[in-house]
Each structure stands twice: as C-alpha cells, then as structure tokens.
Picture (cartoon, one colour):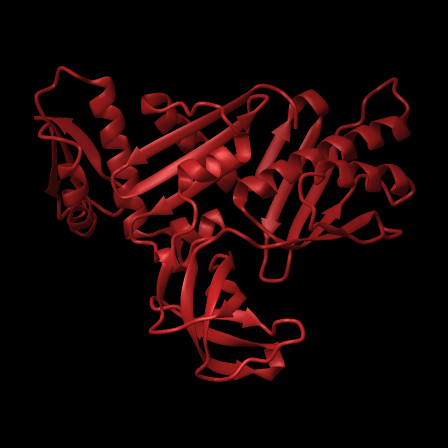
Amino acid sequence: MSGTVEVFLDETPGETRGAVSRGGRYTHLLIQRETDAPQHRLGARSVGRVTEINPGLRGGFVDLGAGPPAFLPFPRNQRLAQGERLEATVVAEPRAGKGAVVRRDGPGEGTPRLLAPGPNVAEHLRAIAGDVTPITGMAAVDAVIEAEEEALAARHVFAAHGIDLAIERTRALVAVDIDHAPVAGRDPKQVRAAANREGVREAARLIGLRRWGGLVVFDLVGDGQDATAADKAARAAFADEPQAVFGPISRFGLLQMSLPWRLTPIEDILYDVGRRPSVETEALRLARALRRRLLSDTRSPRLTVWCAPDEAALLTPLAARLGPRAAVRPDPAAPRGAGRIEES
C-alpha cells in the first residue's frame, strides 16, 4: 500500500503499543504487555529442554523456562530426544490456546532460560517502517485506540469503491466475503474486477492488522470467470508476504491461500473466552484513558479513576507510575468495563 507512512508509539504503564499507517489507513498494530512471558515473544532466543516427543504431530514440546511448553516441528534431517537441551528461537507466538512455535538453532546447555529477548515494539516499528520517527504522546494514544477499533470490527464499508467487506476468523480458517453495489452505466466485468481488486487489497491490510495467519478463503465477486484478474490482484495485495501460498480460484469464485502465523492475534490478547475483554485489558484501557486525560488536562490537581475492584487492583500500581496527579479508587457498584475518570 502506497502513501505517506506514519508511525505511532504509545508507552503506557503496563502495555506498549505501536501502529503504522500508510496512506491514512492502519496496516500494523503491535501490542506488548509487561505480563507477557518474554520467552514466548517473536524472535526470543532461549535454552530449552525437550519434554515430550509426539510423532503424530511430527514434533516435540520444549520447556523454555516460563509458561506452557513451545512446539518444535521435527527439524529436517535431525532427530529429537526427550530430555535434550537445545537453543531455540520463537518463530510464532502463542495463539488460541496453542503455545509458541520454535525452531532449533543448535545444542544448548543448562536449565531452560531466556538468552535474548525478541524485538520490542520500537524495534518492530523500525523493521516495518525504517527510519520514520514515531509520533508519541496524545496523538499516539488516539492512533492505537483507532487501530484497535478497526482491527476488532467484523464489517467494513468502503463507500469510495462501493465495497462491503466482512472478515471472520473461525477455528479452521479466515473467511472473507467481498460484496459490492452495481454501478449504473459501467461494464459489469470491469466493476467486478475493480471490486475484487480493492476488496482483496483491503482484506490483506485488515488481516495483517489483526495479525492473522493460516488458511484464508475469499468469496469473490462473480463466479470465477475473472479468475486470472482476481489471482493477480491477490498476489499483488500480499506481495510483502513471501511465505504466502495461493491456490486456484474455484468455479464458484472462491480463492484459497495460506499465510504464516507469527504474532498473537489481537483478539487473543484482549479477550477472555467468550470474546469478553479480560480484567487486564479493561485495566490497561483505563490506564491509557487516564494517561490521555493527564496529557490533555494539565490544570486539574488530581484525576481519579473509579472502577470495579478487580480492575482497581491491577490499575493502582500502573497509575502510580503516571505521577502524583493520578489516583485509583475501587467502586464495588461499578461493573467491569464501566470505569470513569473524575477530577478530585
């Protein structure tokens, strides 16, 4: 995607976020929490111990010294032995109840432990956008909130192109439905081609924003008669992903492809089971809202967050790091997610 590149970095106590915007649309949202196990972050290098060999899964499980064991696919032309010590690097973060995936770098010694952490958010941003100077402060807070809202939306309407785009992740695959409104006076074939081209391009951006991988199925506009043009559009949309694998477009207008998993999906970070924001997520949202309020309101002597007791327990030490003007008070009558900020 071309256009002006903007980079945002928000370092709120408890959680650091980064966002990248190209041409006014968000393409990346990075989230790292202080409670994350550093051994499970993308790029982290650790000494691990093989705790189980599973021939059915064609791999083994490796204790990295923290959290659930990581999965190690059988290295090519090498064998694994239970109890073996090795050095490993995380190539895919945990997701949907599954542990991290690692590759074997070589033999290891000693107890399972972290050798080198993976890149932090600022380093990830530099890898994505080069030397673009990150925007910080209140503008960054607003940007990462906007990027999250777009990443969590299930439906997207792009009026300029007449496209209605629905994206859903299931246990098996990511489903993308591209719909469009007919354009009077234009060749239907050209309209379909334009809708598919723009729809696939926007879907690629949103899939990247949500940090999804695996099997992706597109329900294209039309019945597959424009397969060559649609295939070309899909390959252009995912040109920045060298590991993308494309299948043929079916007679029903379905395009199938596969993307590698790398980062934990946004919803896996933010939600508990049942797609409800976790207590930690709600506490961090309040921390970010409080930080924004402190940046915008420099005259109030004190700003107090009133919230549910379980949120207050997590938020209190974070608010203390925001300075003496920040305070937290538990409100037993407040439901989760209904915290409020008041001058005091």
